[in-house]
Amino acid sequence: MAHMVVTTTDTVPGHTITKVVDVVSAECAYGMNLFKDFFANVTDVVGGRSGSTQKVLRDARRQVMAELRAEAFALEAHAVVGVRLDFNEFSGGGKSMLFVVATGTAVNLKPA
Image (cartoon, rainbow, N blue to C red; front, side, top):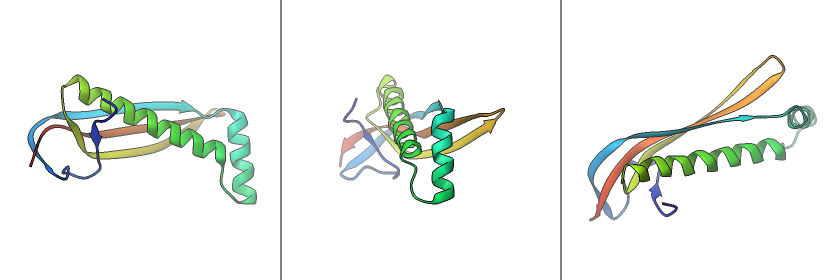
């Protein structure tokens, strides 16, 4: 499963798509705690990059990609093409959540 091809392109070089299996998606919601939010806000004011926020974004991307592979694997697909990642922040009531969604098309392949 870890070696499953997952790509933003519509094709996989050297392969032909033989079957479109299904649309697959994975979603993750992460709470950004007050401590991280505080330091991200300080970085926003003084400039620079927020390492804690970047780590949360990187972890969230890795998690949804792993879950997307698992969805495709459960459908016995060979690959996921046309992958799109969406990142959104929801905040209110003193809380902040990062919501990450990955969608793509699970397909079966054969060597070209």
